[in-house]
Amino acid sequence: MQLTLQIIANGLLLGGLYALLAIGLTLIFGVLRVVNFAHAEFMMLGMFGVYWIWRLTGIDPYLATIIIIPLLFAFGLLCDRLIIQRTIGAPEVTVVFATLGLSILLQNAALTAWTADIRSVTTHYTGMVLTPGGLRISVPMLISFAVAMLAALGLWLFLSRTFYGKAIQAVAQNREAAVLMGINVRRVYMWTFTVAVTAAGVMGGLIAPLYSIYPRIGMSFIVTVFVIVVLGGLGSVSGAVLAALLIGLVEASAGYLIGTAWAELSYFLIFLAVLIVRPQGFFGRRGAEVFGGR
Amino acid sequence: MRFRPAQEGWLPLAAGLTVFILLLLVPLVVTDVFWLGLGITVLMWAALATAWNISGGLAGGLSLGHAAFFGIGAYTSTLLYLRLDISPWIGLFAGGAIAGLAGAVLGAITLRLRGPFFVLATLAFGIVIHIIAVNWRDLTRGSAGLVLPFGGGPANMLFAGLEPYWYIGLGLLALTIAVTLAIQRSRLGYYLIALREDEDAARCLGVRVVQCKVLASAISAMLTAFAGTFYAAYIQYIDPASTTQFEISVQIALVAIVGGVGTTLGPAVGALIVIPIGEISRAWLGGGPALMVYGVLLIVIVLAAPRGVIGALEWLAGRLPRRQKASRHA
Image 1 (cartoon, rainbow over the protein chains, first blue to last red):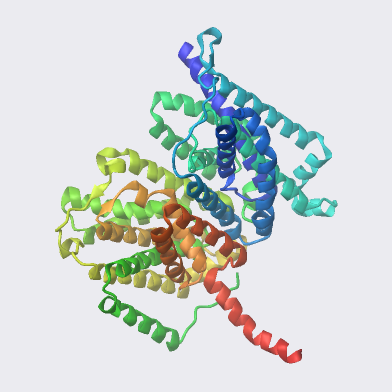
Image 2: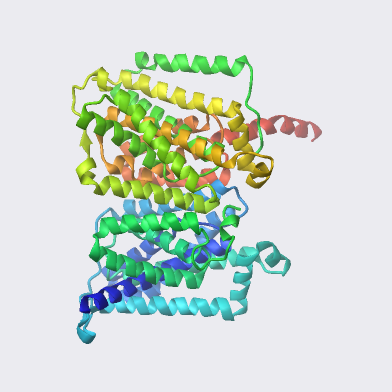
């Protein structure tokens, strides 16, 4: 019983971290129809940003995360202007491979600048745990989870309650009609992409005290996040959050029950099966996959 | 993409034969191990990208899982040789058959998927094969890899010098290009073009969508596996990192895209550009900067010339007369 609760707690905390990445990725897909292969690279940049600020000045990682937000935002704008804007209306090969190229570039730029060394941020609260009812819950993990959930909630409120959020939703639903309604689609694209990758960077900052930091860390996250956004239905924010929590639970329990390698294999097989049987995911709009490459 | 019927006539054939004969003579001129080795690597990637192009370019399904077929080819022939003492010359066809079957299955199950969904499905398939290659240690020895014993002899596709590998690589490339040409001139080729341009319209006109896609995927997978067997015999060591890893899938697609997706010779031209740039920058600058170059190259090509170098050249050639006319007016 104790063990089951512990696994559930671990899974939910992990899922919460995935959620912030997944929301951004699914929004970019829903609105821009671009699969952002470079998404987790922004997370990696956030991790390194926080690491260097902490290492060079001793500033607390959570404070450093706030400091890097404007930097991430500016870099997101730059990538949007130089690459993403140019993929709109371009052939499918451009849409798919431009972000893959960006991912390769960022990963190896980080490798060149900071070497493949594995780094970590250690603070006085790194190993701190809460023990409610005999469970062990890592404090930094809980903080990251709380911030991620708050960010998700804020994003959801923004999308559903504000005028601008509704404009974003309108573009996601029907690009042509949105243009006719006087929505500046280009600007919607720019905001969606930039905010989403900034959120990925913030997530990187939040997990800097928890995970090892190295240039290729994005690789181990991005594929899991793809699984999540497809399960949740590409483009669906609430689907992404639910699927993220679900995958967190699956990863935590399967890792314990059948070993990580076979757990990984099984969830890729599930991923393939979902793609094939129900490509719109469990929460996505039917037919979303048809607009896919256009 | 414009529709262009395959070029007929003796001129392209004569030019092709001339290039082929000149390539046959290369080992007589180039004796330096580095350059000949680089040449063999270029030939192998040219064959891989040309094979990718059959499903990725002609059939229009951008695959990010071809490393799976490459790995199946490499592991099948190597395991048959190590475990059952079956020559890789036979293993070549066994690997091709298994990969062809896997390609047909993948083609069949990804039939309905379009755009990014197809890409993600092929990516997941590639990762599944990679996880199996890493973790089924009893069969593949996992990350430790498999070594082909030295001294197997020509009967086992193992040679002391580099020259034979040049000729096998050249034969492999010639085969994949010949298959591409044959498909382009066959009914299948025209069906595939119709499918790529507008699947719904093609279906309405009676194109057998299932058969075409499955066949293209199987042929592409089989030829990719041939290159895998060749790689294993040439390097004489295979592990998951060098055969089934995601980065290999990316590089196969990258080479084809740089040269020109959907064109006959584009993927081979792509290999001639990408592989030397990669190998030389790796030798001079190291692994990280070399891959940065790949990233930049990929971004620039897909944004500036989505039809690759060949597509850009065709576009230039098409503009030239018009520009002369315009300057006359000015």
